[in-house]
Image (tube, rainbow, N blue to C red; front, side):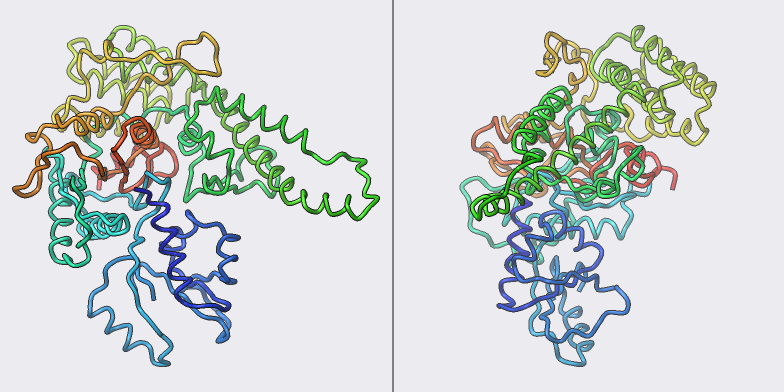
Length: 537
């Protein structure tokens, strides 16, 4: 199961079915994001698409010599199922009779990684209920993924979440209504859709990450594979926005799941390799053969030069932020809060960091949130004291209010699973940074709740009482094809968990999706604090 490949095949098919000749690809805001994540502009150009236009752009020239391929979210290649009334409205609007064909292509989602997709939706709830229009949009996006992967699944959902049950029922309703679309070849073991709620694990989105892709998203913000570096001190004009895509960037593909220590070492190797291949300043071009060799090697050299510049800049900025915000110290205490069971030590370390002027307002609030979730019902809990420390630090009232909202959102009363147990410390697997000899990796102790949930599911031990099936049928055998969807958003730490399980569990294929992919400060609408803003609407 590969969501990236599924979208790429759709785009290729719609272009190829239009026949030979020069083409223009017309897209709306949403489908522009869908296509740009899986295809580079140069790849599309190779398919005779010479112009890319937003359908809502103004002052468009008349270009009747070009074939128009329209890929649109709502209305002609549609990215989901369309109704007869929508087709009729399109036909009535086609006064010039230029529409030759209308097709449905199920690409109504962002394929972030081969095993990770997002619907790019924020604010999907009103308290603990769905925002009605976004339930419809989420249902469309999720059924689009199932159709793209050619899966008609059995459905399980998190019983403690009414939103999970509503979405499960909504997806099932579409599958029943459009049964002909879901009439795929039967497999020995039916695929499974598991619908979860972010509130069951509010801790994971609050933790700093130390693998390359996750760090970039957390500290710089990955938006449809693009990073805005315009605020980096001394940044050159051509590096103000860069693209990180595993499909077109070999270094990124090989390093996206590696930790920060390894990335530093690999950047050094990349630089050394670049220096060896770099053309000599006094290189003589005395013969036709010399010139031909230079021309043949120049594109590869230029591409490598761009790769080196990009990753050195990105890793350099990550290093600067880690140092500036004291993130090694902050992360160590975050991991202690998430994984250990020593209240006295945790309380002391949080207070110490709150008094550190280099710890940012946002990092300080996150530490108190983690403390509030971890020691919510501890007999010695001193949340009021930490709240006063935030006040003395000058943290805004808006941020301070979010601490209590976090407990409302993902506290003990709400959770359906044992997110925090006294045995956590015993269960921790000691790991090491490969790039840091002899230094215990205290920064990667945490495993998201999703790891335990999927482990139990794969072993056939996931409790029906907590994750019931929708309908009378149940899965008798070990699941093989699993689509997991998290209402409220997934994280790159959870994507790494799925990536690792796919590699280490033969015969099991897992795809993870969410209404969004979290970081803490991409914007107020899409932070992990968005979990809290939803409660304030």
